[in-house]
Length: 77
Image 1 (tube, rainbow, N blue to C red):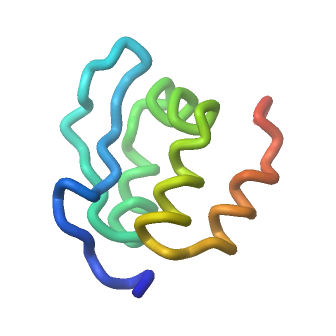
Image 2: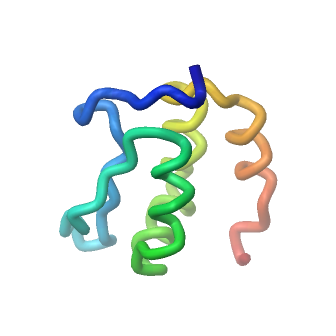
Image 3: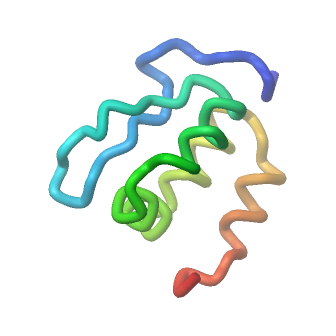
């Protein structure tokens, strides 16, 4: 399941802190990891601080182990 793409409406939509959509949506774990290399750091920090990555990975992708690993990262990182 974790390798299968999800429908667009269940994809991870990257936003900036001001609510601006970056235009990037991850539809699979692979595209999520690829996008992380090119997304503005402010968007990554915004989602990371809110726990958005963990929720999406666990609830949508079905990778609870990766979600827990990310959750354990130091928020100051």
